[in-house]
Length: 262
Image (cartoon, rainbow, N blue to C red; front, side, top):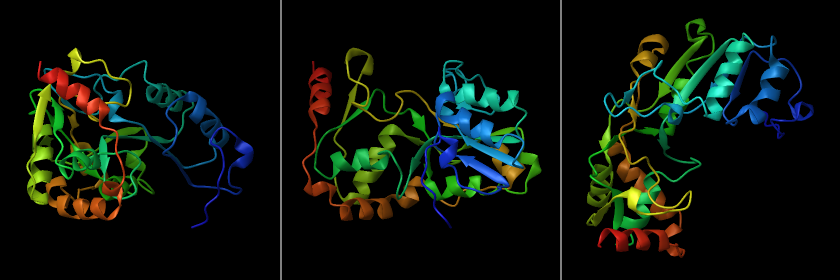
């Protein structure tokens, strides 16, 4: 594969030549995505945009998100999705949830391991039985790879996630069990604590999971991983990363724990 470094907002840096498919796994709003969409408009057979399941409107009655459910009009991803429709692009939109595994951009399982392996308390939003979906990066890539040549995917949205859910407490308890540790869970009410963006628990404090039935039916996709089945491998990689040898700022945790004990 030839790697070409450039800026998604500067067409002069785009790779030369003709392409059948464009995957945009970078942009989150119109400023970042519009130049790429405009440049390849009418030139490709398929335009794949990786959006986010986070753009769904939370639903406390039917929490499992299904393609076609209401999406936040204020979300940057949604504006891009609407623009693809407006342009008449041969698009497919993927909506991933929390992604774990090697070379992922954000902490997922690592957040729990950082605390459990240091024998720290694990602050989790109450009540801890909220369900979420953790998806292995290989399963995510596997679904995206089902698009080329599949005309049935054009004009469609697909949720990208595991077909199994796990509770927030369950994540901590299973990681701790695999590590031979105790999960020192501290439940707290996030509405009582003021935290800056990026501080505190890395997941939503409510149910957050989705159906992948559509991807199974239309794309012929099926997951090869389960989070519980991957914990030993993820623990081994985390320990080998050297993170435990470095200092870590737990000040936000300490504020949460102090508030929870009041």
